[in-house]
Image 1: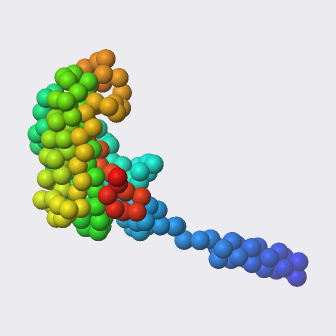
Image 2: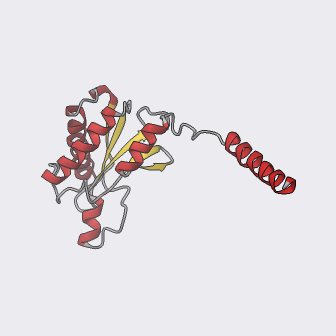
Image 3: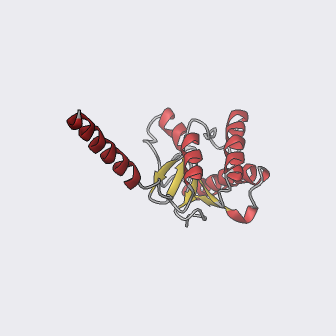
Length: 169
């Protein structure tokens, strides 16, 4: 009997000791664990710049268009309200285009796309000073522009939450 109870005691000490040694999940990107969890649930992924939402199928644009589709606006509104509810302090919106058109035209179009998305985020309650916009034209495609499907995927916006929760530069 003594031997069995000694083994159980040792196991209990080991399990308790390991549990006590575990550290709580650390704050990532200057954000709370709850904020990071909410970002992940919406589809944000960690990147070099912080947390990015680039689910292209939700925030795509038609060729030569800066207007959000109804579905894209609804998805974005839900995400924007989550950002505000979770006290995410700031977001940067990067607009992109496919490679058709001139570089200067694409830069302007991508900026208009980013601004359209920023307007929805501000309407959801985030202060306009905390929403940055960039038009990146066709410089950063996610796939080849050689097919209609590829060009479609490149006409997008990406939401970025900086490493410290502030605007990513």
